[in-house]
Amino acid sequence: MVYRVILADDHPVVLKGLTLALTKDRLAEVVGEAQSPHALLALLEDVPCDALVTDFSMPGAEGDGLELLSEVRRRHPSLPVMVITTVINPALYREMLATGVTALVGKAGDAREIPEAFMCMMSQSVYLGSSVRELMGRPSRASARAGLWGTLTALSPRELEVLQLFASGRNVSEIARATGRGLSTVSQQKTNAMRKLGLGSDTEIYEYVDYLHLGRSSDRGAPR
Image 1: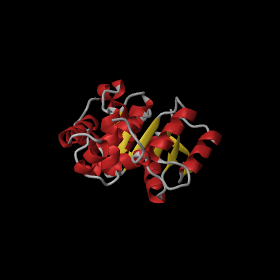
Image 2: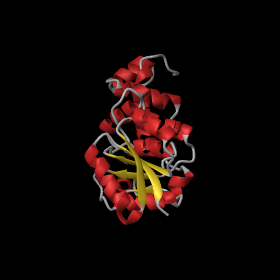
Image 3: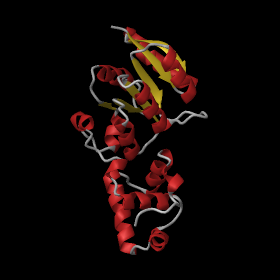
Image 4: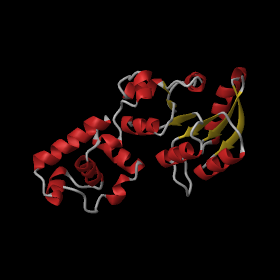
C-alpha cells in the first residue's frame, strides 16, 4: 500500500529530504506540503491524507509547536502524526507525545530512521528516534503508549508556580520572598518539578516554560 502523506516544514531542503526518504520504494506519496501552521491546517482540511509528518516549530501568525499539534489532534483525531524536530528537551518530548504524536525523530539523527518511523507509526506503534530515546533514558514503546512519562499534569500548583517564576528571571531566594515560603521549600519544589519532568538543567526549564507559554501568568497571584 502507498500511503498519502502531507509534509510540513519551513525549510525547503528538509521537505525535499523527507520526500526522498518517504517516496523511495513507493512507501508513500506526498500529496501536499506546507511551510507554516496556517498553511498546514488549511491543507489538512482540503487534501485527504493517511498521515502527517511535521516539524515541531514553524514561523507564522498562528500558534506552532504544542499548540499546533493539539489543534491537529482536535480536528483530525485519528490522523497518525510524526514529528521531526531540532528540540533537545525530554520534557517537551513528553508533551508532544501527550498530544497523540506516535513517531518522534530528531532532525540531527540518521535519515534512515524516517522510513522506519513512518512504517512503525502506520502500524499503530510508537516510534522514538535514537537521539530521542537516548535523552529520555531509553523508555520502552509500551511505556510511551501507556503514557507513563511525566508531563505538566504531574506538577503540583506550587511546583508549576516555582518553574514559572524561575523562568521569568527570579532566583530561588527571590521566589521564596515573593511567595512567602521558605528557601529550602522553594528549592525542593524546583527540584521536584525538574525530576518529575525529566529536566536536567536550568536551560531546559526556560525552554520548556517558553514552548508551553507558561510564563504568561507567572506574575499573577498563584496559590501558596
